[in-house]
Picture 1: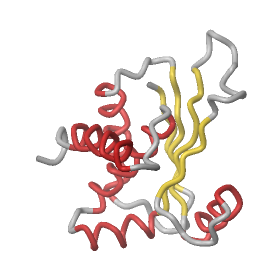
Picture 2 (picture 1 turned 180 degrees about the horizontal axis):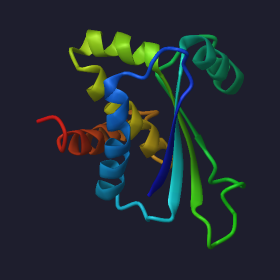
Picture 3 (picture 1 turned 90 degrees about the vertical axis):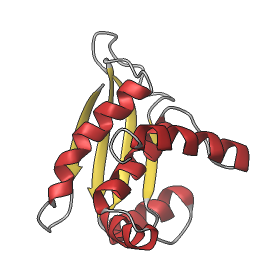
Length: 148
């Protein structure tokens, strides 16, 4: 799977930022995502995330991760080019906050959110307990490659 990672903050990229590509690659292997598929991971601040959450989910608050799938229309591009699955937007301020709350490293929290966002791009949902548990099982399997 092809991927692009964008750091949209004025602050210097932390060391854990370099691990994002390895996380995406490992998740793609476990999920058996074809090499012609492509995603973008975009790291933003609280203000941008709040604005996106308000605009697209009508919730005027910061959230940790948003996934914007392109499977509905724009993904129908040239068959010789990668199929663009969509964007995963992650709020780095939430990564820091949640890592402290859960007792994780920032790196592990970033990994969790990338995997969670990727699963949403692949069509997984977590709107009820059964769906949530299915996603959690897959997330934990992928995370176990890095954090056991």
